[in-house]
Every structure is written in structure tokens, then in C-alpha cells.
Length: 85
Image (cartoon, rainbow, N blue to C red; front, side):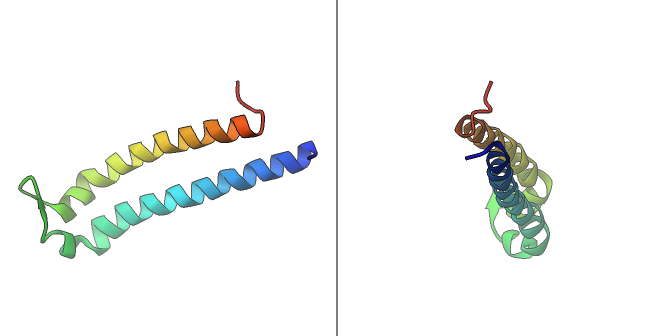
């Protein structure tokens, strides 16, 4: 595979990872925190309504977790294409 093809394949995989992770974040932050808040508020987590929790805390926790997932995915991708340090 030529270097140009390698770069294109690397970037394509990177964009796929970004799209998936951003979709997860959108679903958790907007879907659970705004759209499904009324349905989730019928469930309590430690005395707090689950919809409120997702809107205030859950989306932040998920975002931080997604940062670490992205880091792991990119380290693996870098190794796959010989770009690791």
C-alpha cells in the first residue's frame, strides 16, 4: 500500500471512530438528557431522577469515558499504520 493510500485509510478509520463516538455522546447527552428525560425521570438512582442525572452528570461522565476510549482506539490505529511512537 502506498503512503497516500495509507494516509487515506488511516483518516477514514479515524473519521469512523469519531462518528461513532460522537453519536454515542449525542444519544446520551441530548437523547437521555432532553428527549427521554420524562421517561427516565420515572426511574430513581440513589434518590435522584435518572433523567435529571443524565442531564447534569451522566453526559459528562460518558464524555470523559469516550475520551479514554478514543485514546485507546487511536493508539491501536497508530500501531496498525506504523505511526506509534
